Image 1 (tube, rainbow, N blue to C red):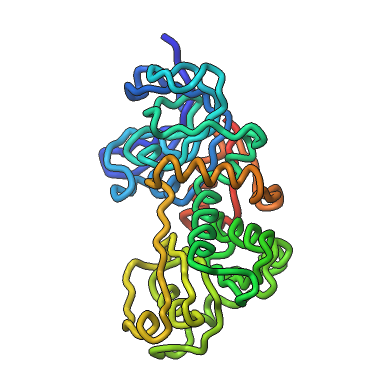
Image 2: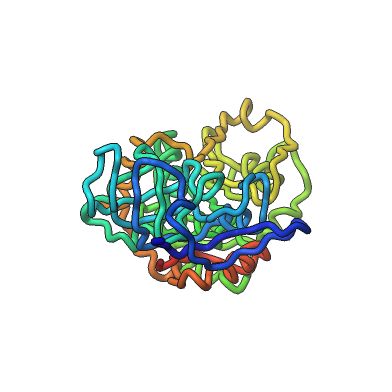
Length: 328
């Protein structure tokens, strides 16, 4: 029987999750349109949660995690893609309740798949992955809501994560003045090399006395944290400023009044790349491959499939930064 290698998360009778590299039969993959030989994947916090057995991310085990994958089409029952076409899959249900990209092969619906732009190498597509796509969508939303480089500073929270670092790099590339919010002082110089003009302390930011409104500091913001950090960000936006909201690492509650929205006309823009329409994802990949192309090599580390479980554990512990590209 033909087999393939994949990382598989299993739950013991005692309820403990474990993730290991195993050989699996092709019958383990779901019946679907497109069979893809994966060349690269990348790691995201959702992958770490799935591999830890988090039922809010993945309900059924055993399970192959991985919300990102890029590779070549082996076969396509839908007829949409030719054999050998270079493709990328990010989000939708892959790696959550459908088997994911930390695997030599995936089988997914045709309407999850995008052909990689000609000028974009497969490996670079996975340097961006879901994190980069989310950052690009956040910046696109801010620009659509009238943010421009001459309006003032743009704040990026969670700045040492994948979304945060790519956001800083891309905003700087586009001419914006970027301020990074970070809880990792050791990475301050790295953030400045990416393009942040200033780095402010996450702890100091969180400990500011509570007020209905603060001085108007930021023309816009990208928030990956949520909770009280997002509240603080909204209260500091300039008149008409927007914050693109794409994470909830620090909480899901927003204990605040409506003053910033009524008195300053501020806006919260929800960003969720996973379920974005395929046409919009395609438009973002075209931008990433062309006018928004930036070098992410300095924030990416390439690892092997067998190294992934250890990195996912470090992610859960908060001991990682930047992006991990997985060579399959």
